[in-house]
Image (tube, rainbow, N blue to C red; front, side, top):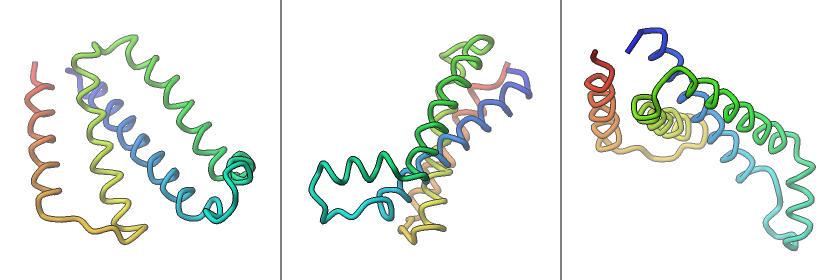
Length: 120
């Protein structure tokens, strides 16, 4: 796999992780859970961070279709799992969620697998 393809795929995976962090932010700060369901949905639809998150993820969907135009799905899709690392580390940094050593070991195994996959 070409280096430029690996960079594109890792950039895409990082963006997916950022999108998940945006959704987590909205879940924590976007809407008062004490409101009735209908008001929560209306409040969510009017929340700028939520709207941005949805547009961001929609843009990522278009980017994914573009990527699949020149990278086989069987080689590209496994790279999306790196979004787990971005979301996990970001959730620890931004929301003080705990991370265990097992998390980093698992990410190491995933990264090793992606290295093997990208060898030509």
